[in-house]
Image 1 (cartoon, rainbow, N blue to C red):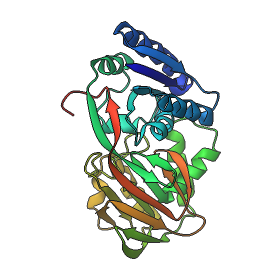
Image 2 (tube, rainbow, N blue to C red):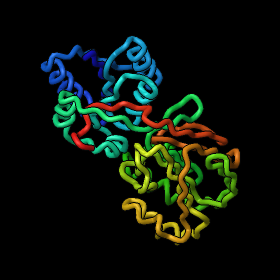
Image 3 (cartoon, helix red, strand yellow):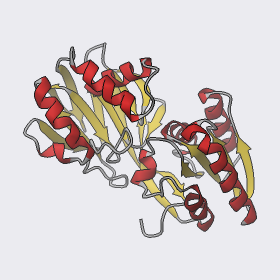
Amino acid sequence: MRVSLVVNPTSGRGRAAAAADLAQARLSAAGHDVRRLQGTSGPDAERLCHEAVADGVDVLVAVGGDGMVHLALQACAGTSTALGIVPTGTGNDLARALSLPLGDPGASADLLVAGSRRQVDAVRCGDRWWACVLGTGFDGAVNDRANRMHWPRGRRRYDIAVVAELRSYRPTRFVLELDGVRSEVDAMLVALGNAPSYGGGMKVCPGARIDDGLLDVVVVGPLSRRRFLWLFPRVFKGTHVSDASVTVHRAREVRLDGPPTATAYADGERIGGLPLLSTVVPGALRVIGVPAGT
């Protein structure tokens, strides 16, 4: 195969560079033609991904965290080029959805060499693709705040942003169109899930499946601060959906609208303001290096 490795050398505090070396060595030893890509910025890395796919590369391997996977997804979705993942970040939610080994680059490299493949859904949103979860409302406000913070690093920064944002956040009126059926809801947050988790394993859409052709739409209704803080930890196990304040819908196409101040994030990346139209494209993404039988 012709393989391109796209690498974020700073991911995992430098672990990505070593993981890329390992994956490149094992793929080359198996007889594959491997090329290394390393952009100077996110847009530059995405440009290199698109160029590799346009050049007919068989496999594009993202070595890094969710940010690097998101860039590679933009190039691979809707094409015949397969996406491989060597997860080295702190989130790794698409890797989780695909049952890939976390924290073991050697195991990921071995799966790439073994070459097991799977087709899964991806979601088209304007001119962008996403694969796991799109969130807005309180979720978007927290991400905006966390991105403005320079300390601490990792999961702790998000937790601090949650507490800080909760002091002033109020429920918002959203307009949902689920496969053309319109409704208005007052909600703390709305999450669309093609896969169960975001934010490094937070199962905000626990029933979502990456190959069922549908989005799970999770709406968390108005809550007091105390009630929200009680409910929030349950997101890590996905048990929040049993609470009376939470409703779950399913649709293939979701149009989401709300106030001009609302922002949406998908797979940890800022997508933009509302309105947004998200459409599942069944089987749009070919993945390689998945465990057999998944």
